[in-house]
Length: 629
Image (cartoon, rainbow, N blue to C red; front, side, top):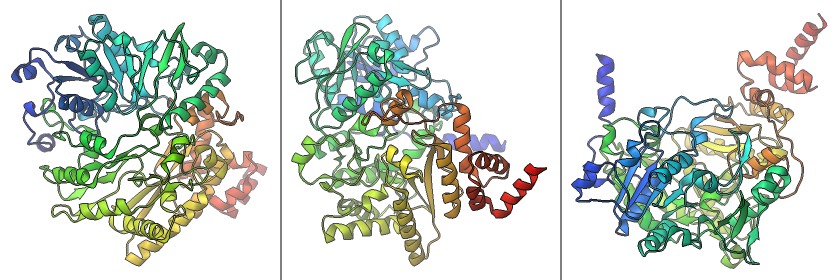
């Protein structure tokens, strides 16, 4: 009886919800209630439908709706039965849109050890199995078989990061552009508001999808001849034969993705030429405001009857302030999808959204996150935009912060202060990752230096819920250089600052560092040293992970090819499960069941000095006596 009451209360958590008419329709009945006989555009998504600006399908639907189009959405269609979910809304007037969801489906489904996960954060109740592997491919093929004359345009993270030949860790092989595998007519990559509206207009005006070849951020098959200004990549077939060819391709792909005005890329695949049009310039503040200011209900659709959607639980009281990231971390896909140039919302737009959060029925006064891809890049960029226009650096922070970078945290502080002054806000937290190296980088003048120092102090005293999570990622400078992250010595300085600010404020907060094992350039000995260093700093690590190769990152290209795309240098990477476990064990030096395994490994590595550092000198003698016996 108690359990029944508990579940009943959980089902009330999202209630009261807005009426179905406030959402994009998801059924024929909902379309008819709006007076529609036919939708203009029907979106298929691998995620549950949450009408929130953090969910891509909702954003695309609302943007198209704001331009006058009738948009319906089919969330998590059943692909195993008679395909009724793919037929229930009929044919759209213009096109189908397909997205695997907010994550690559294989990251969603499998662990770093390729083991099946048992839950799905983007599904009601966290239920696993509501989407197939590679939904972009599965959904698109089904739609083309059922409606061969209706254009299918695929987008979202999965399609975006698989737009050219790419290594697939879960199949352990190189795969062609997802355009070739999916049977879709076109791929939209990156943040899709601008290209999808342009495509809708052209299709509505009578242009056939096969003739739309020049829209930025699209990937198409084309019979055109590349111009002299374009870049022709090594073909998919050449990359299959020679891994170095794939490595050489990647540098072009990353550099062109991170330019304000990139070049057209071409890649021959299965005898046809695939054309990858460059990105749109970064969105202006007015453009990004227009997207975030749309009439989202910010709630899951009533069809879920109050069931929890874990991914929504995490962000329902959060606000995203900007897009893009200029950190350029080797293992991260953000710049490949959103670009390295920051598109920031106006303070007015952010405050308006915070006020909407304040009116939610379950809001208790706490904003869970005022953030973005990296929490503290709001309103930042190059001081001289002409320099940025010529720049090909994938990171503005590595190997050293760019002297042209304006890292003034003043605008960010102004937003924090404005949010915290709202009557219904008790406190705002920063849940997104903070780049402490950005805030600690050299400032252009005393005013900026003062703002940055004040930012770090206020972050620690006013915006941490007892635990501040940051990502040094490793302790070895060799590994960190490959990761495009700063030296661990900077993390030590930040920890000293964190401890000092806490002491002065009379706080007892924790610093929680993230670390990665088995990243390219990381050897077992590097992990052993990480264990000794984190022990010295009195960290019992919690936030750790094995490196997982995901499409379109420098680290994945190194993992697959064995070479660094920029230097051609051969780089060691742990690949087997045995090698990965040998590295991972050092995270947990403090656990009794790991102790003897770690000591045995350190003897094998001839690092008795680390046994002494981690476990004490007596442990070395005890092991010596045991081995003699």
